[in-house]
Amino acid sequence: MAPWIRIACLILLIILGLYGINILGFWIFNRVSHPEATEKERQEWQINNFNPDGFLTWNTNPGFDNLNYDGGLKEKDIAAYAPLGQNSWGMYNFAWSFWEPQIPLDRFHAYIKNGQYHAYLKHGRGWSYGVTMISQGTYSGNPSSKTWHCPKPLNIKNKKLILSFDARVDQAKVDITKEPLSWLMMGVNVWYRSPHMPKPLVMDVMFYSYKGVVFTQEDEIAYHYQYVLNRGKNDINKWQHYDMDLNWLIDRAVKRFKLKNYRDELEIVQLDILIEAVYAEGAFTSDNLGIYYQEIKP
Image 1 (cartoon, rainbow, N blue to C red):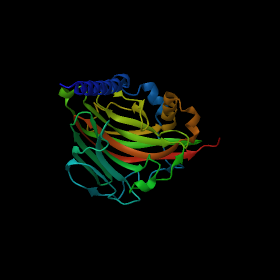
Image 2: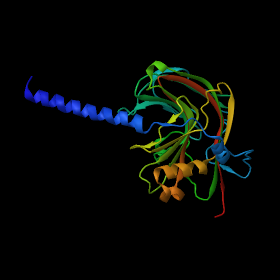
Image 3: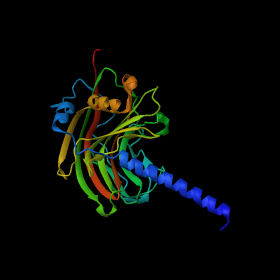
């Protein structure tokens, strides 16, 4: 073998080795055990007997009222569309990896029937995360890039903020032979931006978590803060209702990423409810997904 070929092969092996170490490091150092919210935490963030009277709603049509749409079961596909028009929810179904931003999903079915959103996802490609979600807004800060409804960004300063939703986990299956890559979570994403912050902040609020771990970390896209409301393992086919004080979670995320200087500049820019899967299959039904806010006198 010519010397230059040996040198090229050695360089390639070094690059691949460093890349592998980087990926392994992500899994080791960002993988944090988090069984679920403690009773003390629940008492802090839970809003008992929440009454939305006197509150405004950031997103439109939280109850999916008078909406019906079914795109059918799809396989080996990517889909981003607004079948309900520009003034309603949008649907997004895709997979992503560290080196590929858009990958077809193995199988998915997302539909709205009788005022409820239903999501089903099966994805089995390693090192890629399958996502099926319904959404309003855009974390990019460019509403014209989306064909669905993008509410005006909401500054959070001096506001009560309540995340309210109902969810029922309908199915949860994980291929345990693919450990440690297997992953399944269902939850709500809330995205924030600040005019002076280098990237957005996204909070994953999980109502189902297979592993009971979180990957709170910063990457080139965003600050990712994950929180497990409920593992959900004992709640298959049971409706759960959540009324959460978003300011409680915002304060935790701001502290984690040292973003205190941007806290009062944060604006809510996107709301999603989703399934995320790797070597897994899951389904849920949701209703009454909304962010409610009320001005507070300083």
